[in-house]
Image (cartoon, rainbow, N blue to C red; front, side, top):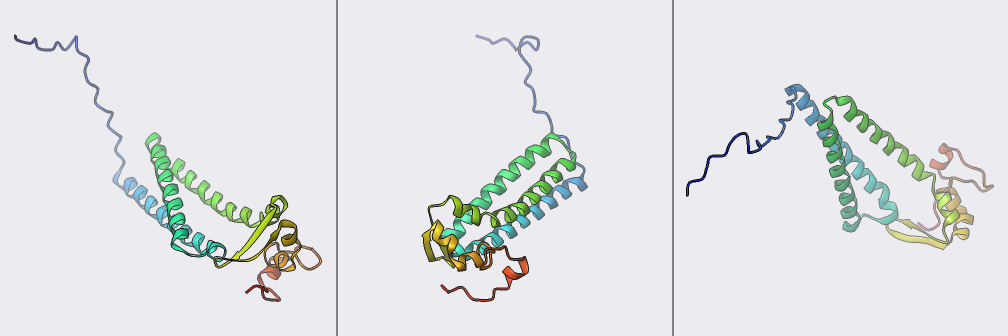
Length: 179
């Protein structure tokens, strides 16, 4: 039996996917350069983050694995969101605004986290102080908050309970007793 040729009027035409608008070669290279620079900046932050964590939780391969995993997940999410943003608008100001927002968020995160040791002791029942991956001091939150070493080295408080200036905190008058 012979099949009839499909009628162009009766069969729906297949739609071809819309071609992505082409970028000028200079802008395309600039986007690639941006992706490379932001990726390198994130890798630097990863290494610095591991260095910041090392006095507290050590530098074992478990720490590095967790640090790398978090960084790669963040990179993948950022590249996905950046790609979606770049597909919606070819105006680079959206993309660079997002990068600037991420940089400000990262800078503020470091400042906010440093200020939360006192608040953490207010809500915790028990605490540990770790130096270079080992526990050097532990106790109830009240005991740790009253410890003169914890006050000086972690909470930025003097013997009288008054806050110390940044210069005084960075130049310790005595060594930690547990080292």
